[in-house]
Length: 160
Image (cartoon, rainbow, N blue to C red; front, side):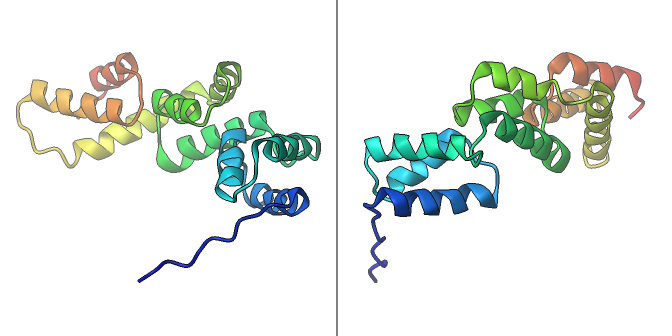
């Protein structure tokens, strides 16, 4: 069964209009928009012009995207700073903006989220040996992007 052919866009004005709708739906990084424009079949010169127009029209703003990404991944998915930073790097966000966006996370909220995450996981871990149990909990916290020193501190201070 053949999949329907994707319609290619060759007109820059049509591409701009479609990109405006794409950016208005949710915050996007420049790389996401660039990839989508290439997918639609536009050429490099047209793509760069559209990106410039989107920035000028305030449809595209990397700092706003980075802040929204950090907020969303921390609040909704309980990701740690390391995992969030990697996600932003994959979206080609500049290191300066990444650092600035990560500073918006309140340390007390961050520690509370880490503690909640470890306590929730501790209820499901059946390991009896304390050292192995703590190792599993710390590995879980690491897999969620939390720093090893913070997770070991939480494990020492809590009685799980």
